[in-house]
Amino acid sequence: MQKMTTVVYGEALVDDFLSEQVVGGAPFNVARHLAAFMSPQLAITRIGDDRNGAIVRAEFERFAMSDAGLQLDQMEETGRVAARRHVRGHRFVILPGQAYDYINPEQALAAMESVEASAIYFGTLAQRCPRSRDTLYALLDASNATRYLDLNLREGQFDERCVFHSLHAADIAKVNEEELQSLFAWYVDIHPSSPPLEGDEVRAACAVLVQLFGLAALIVTLGHRGSVYFGADGTVLVHRDNPLPPFVIDTVGAGDAFSAMFLLGRMRGWELGMTLARANEFAGAVCAIPGAVPRNLAFYDKWVARWRAG
Image (cartoon, rainbow, N blue to C red):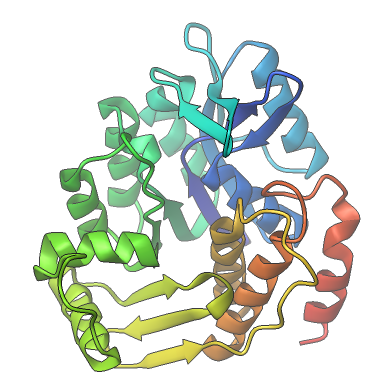
């Protein structure tokens, strides 16, 4: 009997710092976290037949991940983000026309048919080109799995139409505070220049978004302040009791860590409050390491031991 699997769709790429290359991409970060917790997952992505593609392949091997959903492109390069230093740190340039923009639908559908999908994770970056966007919707149409959208907006890489269709396609949508403000401006006619909203007004506006897009839930992450879950049934679950990390190196990948743990909790049948608490705590822990995914897999050991017990 096939194990229920989380299908993770979208970009695997390399952040190029010139002196080193670091594998990233929100979907691939989520897939690697799930693999580290031995939760069945299928990463559907596309890389080039190049040096950076070999670096991505090495991560599949390091995390003992199936490469059934990994496509090889003989023409396009592996996704790359050029990191350039400037006075305030790094500036990241997401390059156009990368292999993950051309995910093949036939190969993707064949890969998904090999598993029993419980959830499909997707975002917006891999929808910037028609080929991968159409492949995503072919996968969504072919499955009854829960659709989890991590909006993950990147400047210059999306338009409102993509957001609109993504929200309509989702069952559960996760956004950060900045993204929520964009949704308010587009769909609730509340703009940043509007007077600050009271708590009840924010809840009412989020309820409108849930109803407008037919969502089962909207999750808003608040950084170190936790998260809020808005359910279609009127449930509002605020989780702010988060142990702070001893220090913060960077916040890269915190949202991906949250999504991975939320999906893990659903897979393992954790109670919702516990799932949110663990997702918040794990996201905070990732802020205490450099990058989105730990270089030493021993990082996961204490979490695996703790959560195996309950």
